[in-house]
Image 1 (cartoon, rainbow, N blue to C red):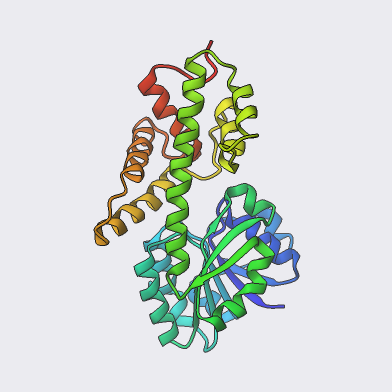
Image 2 (image 1 turned 135 degrees about the vertical axis):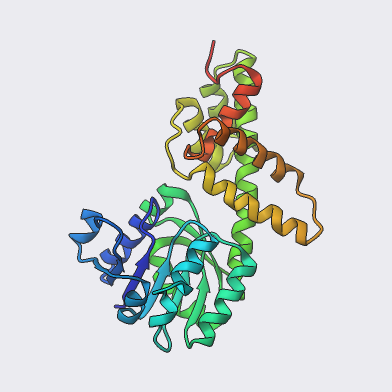
Length: 295
């Protein structure tokens, strides 16, 4: 069993940490207000800062919102690198910029650690059910060390390539997810405006070529109008920004991605930055002056 420092106990981080505790690992985290009772009752302890966590743990896992957050945790004042012991495994499971990830890896390895980027897909449900898809960028040795821990939290673990490759895969994932959510939204909006029973339309589509997990999970959210996250629009906006910034550096056009980002921005402008990303439907409804399910 390992002594693990887990930093980032948000919507997904909490259940992920819980699975590690259930597997018998000892966990510590950074003190941020009151520790979740379900984690505290299972033995998770709080320490003053990331430096103290690194001094106490053999493995560090980060699950925070954005690139600057990872940089602050690892390299800011009282950061992980100040307490890093030789051989410490650092696994970043956040979704951040691939180029920054490569730089972070160099700095951690230069300090004697091993760096793995392992962003995830599957949302809150995947985290709760230990069914996440995990996309890994690592050396072969780093992947071998990380894999047993990742298998506790996820169902599909793929070693994509060297450090940064996991984050590149996650950006691609977020492009596909955003465009598929938009496609499901447009299909259901069309069916509703034409007077069809959208629940029966979704049921029928799930049996054909249009079938997808997004049609299944988010299509139901749209019909039931349950837009609590899930995965917040503002976080998906961040991921699409990474995609569009990367596309510019590669001289690559991503018109569908840019359009999805504009629809997310429309949601944010109407106070929906913290809606589930299925809430992209509401931007399309505003354009159509029609709400899915209206008679």
